[in-house]
Length: 269
Image (cartoon, rainbow, N blue to C red; front, side):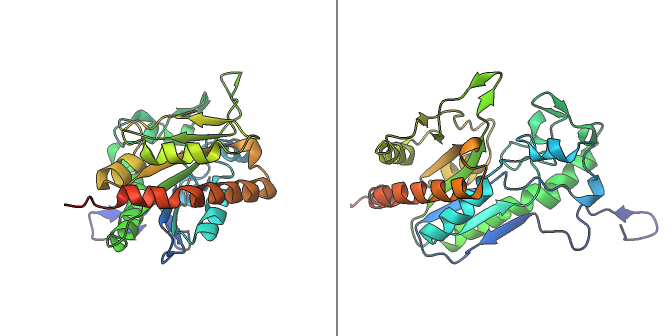
């Protein structure tokens, strides 16, 4: 806590020595792809304890997207792509949710109560936004601004649970889009060459501008071709699986890259 004057105190959410709200990998990557990973970590700021949850609960999907960061880091290396990752749990504040939504700072997730998110006043919520949500998205904006002279294809890397509401989810990977389906269509076509996997078209989740934040703002908002990639968690629970999926995605991306960049090119007068 930092004293600013005799009547007012300013409280910082992050203690000295804690990681920044985001991490940028390969910032000057020369590839055409830009990667983001909204749910890369299940870390909770020390000031918030464990939000009233035990380590096993934080390790589950409610706390982050297991395996997504490992895939994203490896894919960034394959494609020489810059990557921005969030550094804190989606339970502290979800970097891919519109701030007006109740699940931006959820009081429960998948039926699990989150005691540390109950009874928050507007100042508590604003502090999480200011120190975690805004810096992460500013980092993405800054990176994209630095590449404004060249076309960029925006890929958001996520993972999903094999079972939801007692129903098995058959897809090994899902490719999702918002209003602009063009990049998703190319990637779906490339992945269809692999007979060993089941690919979801806008499954298990579509992109909804009323719910999602990252791609509607940084992708559609900038007129960039964009896609959300969701990988089933049982396929990337181990490092070997994450490495294999990163290689598979890199191969699929290279197959469509020229066609995707052609779509980005300005029309001739």
